[in-house]
Each structure stands twice: as C-alpha cells, then as structure tokens.
Amino acid sequence: SRMLMKTVGDGRSAKPNAQRIYRGISLVEKFIESQPKDVDEVLFNALLDTCCRLRDLTRLEATVKRMKDLSVQPSPVTLGILVKTYGQAGDLSKVLQVWSDMEHQRGQANAVTYGCMIDACVKCGSLAKAVEIFMGMRETGKHKNTILYTTLIKGYGLDKDLPNAMHLFREMATEGVPYNTITYNSILDACVKCNDLPTAEGLLREMMSPSSANEPDLITFSTLLKGYCYMGDLDKALQVVEAIKARGLRCDELVYNTLMDG
Image (tube, rainbow, N blue to C red):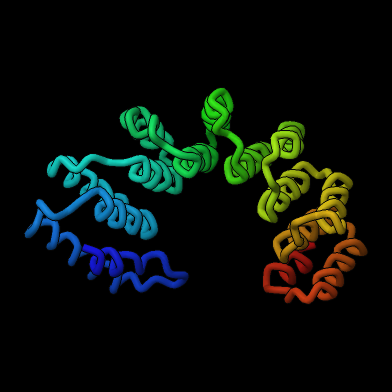
C-alpha cells in the first residue's frame, strides 16, 4: 500500500509526468480490485489527491464511487480534497453539495479542510459563502489561522473590496495571527486592484521595516510594479525594478512584460 501511494504521489512534483502518474493510478486501481479488504481511506485519499492535481474529475468521481461501494469511510481530508478539486474546476454547486453531504466530516475538520473550502468558494466567486464559513469558525474560536485570513483577504481583493480586506489584515494583529509574505502579497494585490497605491506603499514600508518578520519577494515587487505601470507612473515603476535588483532578486519575464505593457 505504501509503495502504491508513493507511485501515485508523483503527482505532487513540480513537473509531473502524466503518463507515469496514470500508470501509477492504474496500479492502485488494480490493487483495489484484487485486494479490496486491504485498502483504506488513506490510500483512497492519495488517489483522490492525485486526480485533483491532474484535474481529472471523471476519475475522481469514479474513485469516490468505488470508495462508497467498498464502504470505506471518508475523512475530513477526503472532504478537503473534494472541495479543492471542484473549486479549481469552478463548480460551485458541486463544492456546496459535497460540503453539505459530508456533515460528519465537517464536524471533525481542522483549519486545513476549512481553508480548502474557503479557497474553493473564493475561486468560484462566492465570497459570501466563504465569509459565512469563516464567521462560523470565528464563533468556535477556530479562525485564528494565517491561511484562512490570507485566503479571505485574497477573496476581498478579487471583489475589489479594499476596506474589508484591510479590516481583516489589521484584525490578524489584534487576534495574534501571524502575517507571512503571502498575506502581504495578497493585501498588496488588493490595493493595486483598487488603485490605492499609497496604501500599498505604506504596507511595503511596513514589510521592509527592521521590526518586520517578513521579507518581500519578487511577487511583492511585481505586484507594486503592476500598479505603477497601470497608473502610468514609469519613474516609480523603474524604481521598483532597481529595488528588485538591489535585494539580489532576479527580474523575470513577468517583470519585463509588465514594464513593456506599462
């Protein structure tokens, strides 16, 4: 079982070999057919997770059916994988259906599973549902998680709702939830989407202050660069490029394309 899971786990690599992964999936499926009494939820989750990474909904749903046929009980991890898969496919109805059907697993779920659900709702454009789930977690005190806050900030950014994005960002400090670079990048992106570059500049200064535990990365600078180019401020855009080089970061294709578009 462990060897089969390792084979299926090739789907987690940066450049997965689809042909090899599908051979691994076939091996797992044959194992399930030949030794159904030896399979468990962990093996099924490995298989489902790989289908998620391959964005193979047909195979994922066939695997879920086989899991039910063998009376293998899904776990909160299973729930997280399913909502993540349907979320990246943009299928809100399936996301909500799975979340509703797996009530027992919801009760056992941790912040990772809830994070998958909030992210799925954001990806499907249902910010209201994402907020509803977050507020439900707040009532039970389970909301104090960097990924949860960051995902919701990203959602508000996509909705161009900077006041609520900033409110959540500042609330993290009062709730004792640590920021990370992705959090800063998400709030900076929200500022840029809302054309509020002064606030974005203030956040970058805050991030680069000696007391900050976070370092800006190429995405941080690229986000601000995009904002300056959109506003037609070439001088500040070029200053950002110099700042990228001064910090030893390498300007990539995205940086140069943004400059040229600006």
